Figure 1 (cartoon, rainbow, N blue to C red):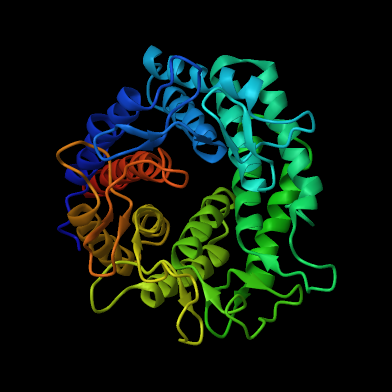
Figure 2 (cartoon, one colour):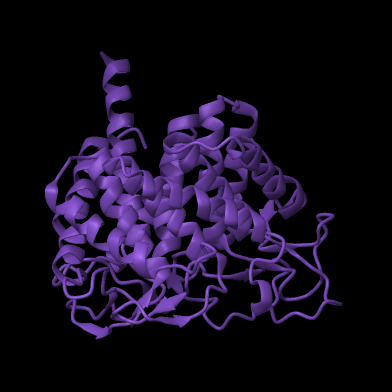
Amino acid sequence: MASMNFALLAKQYKKELFDSIIPFWLKHSLDRKFGGYLHCLDRDGTPFSDEKMMWMECREVWMFSHLYRTVSQEKEWLDAAKLGADFLRKKGCNNKCEWYFLIARDGTPLIAPYNIFSDVFAVMAFTEYGAITGGKWATQLAQKTFRRIQQRLSNPKGKYNKKLSASKSLVEHALPMMNLYIAGILRDLAPLPECDEIIENSLDTVMRTLFDKKTMLVYEYANPDGTHPDSPEGRLINPGHIIESMWFMMEELKRRNDKKQIELASKVMLNALEFGWDKEHSGIYAFLDAKGYSPTPLEWHMKLWWAHCEALYGCLLVYELTRNEKFLEWFKKVHDYTWAHFPDHEYGEWFGYLHRDGRLSVRLKGCLWKGPFHVPRMQWKAWQILESIQNRNTSTQG
C-alpha cells in the first residue's frame, strides 16, 4: 500500500466537503422564515416535511460552528450557525434543559424530550458555538445540558420508559461511547471538573462491561456484570458503532500516549471490520447477531452511509497511530465501495440507504435520522489526517 497517493486522497475528501456537502446544506436547509434548519430533503434538496428533529438541528449548528473554528472564519458559516443556535435557544428544550425530540417548523414541541441523544447533540452544538462566539450563554447551556445528561443516565427515558420495574436493566453501548465523546469536547473547549472522571468511567464501561474478550466484539447491550443475555437484544452487534466507538477511544488514548490500549482498540476495530463486512456483496452490514442467527432489526442487511464514514476515518486514524498496513488495505476497500455507491454526482451530497446488493434504497438526502453530520465530519477528519500522513511521509523521505 506504499503507492497510495495520500496527497491526492486529501484533495478528494476536501473537495467533496466544500464543493458538494456544505453547499447542499447552505442552499437547501436554512430556514430563514422561522430559524433553524429544514433537513427532510429529497434528492434535489426539495423539502418533503418541515418537521425538525432535534438531533439534526443541533448537528447542523455543530457542523457550521466547527468548520468556522477549525477551517476558516467564513461569515456564511457563522451566520448559518447563528440561525440554528438562536432558534434552538428559544425553542429547543424545556425549563429542565431537556431537549425535545421533534418540533414543528415554528418550534412548537411535537415529541417530548424522551430521548437523551437530543441532549448529547445539544452539548456538541452549543459547546462549539460558544467557542466561536464567546457567548457565555451558549457555553453555560452546553454545560447545564451535559450535567442534566449525567443525572438521567440511569434511566435516560425517565417517565417515558416502557419497561416494567421487574425487567432487568441492560448497559447500552451508545450511552458511554457518546458520553466519552462529549466529555472530551467539553474538556477541550468548555471544561467542567467532572469531565476527566466521566471520560474514565466511559472508557471502563465500554472495555470492561460491553467488550467481550472471546469474540473481540463490543456488544450493543450487556448485563452490568459483563455477561450477555442469550436473546436477540443481548446478541446484537452493530459493526459501525464498534468502529466509531473505537476511534472515539483512540483519540483519547492518543492524547494519553497509551500505546497498549491503542493496540487493543485497533484489534477490536479490525475484528469489527472483518465481522461486519459482507463478503458476497461488499459493504458493512447494519446489524448482525453475535451467534450468527438472523438479526431482528429489519434493516440489518442494509448498507448505511454513516457506518462507512466511521470506517473510513477509523482506518486512517489507526494507521496513523500504529502504521499497521492492514488498515490501509481496509481503508482502500471501504473507500472504493463508499465512493462508488453513496455520492450523488448530479445533485450533490450523499445518499444514505442502500440495499444489501448496493442498489439505492432511498433517494433522500436528509430525514429524521440522516443529516449534515457523519459525512462532513468524516470528510473533514479524513482530509486532515491524510494531509498529516502525507507530510510525515515526505518528512521521513526527506
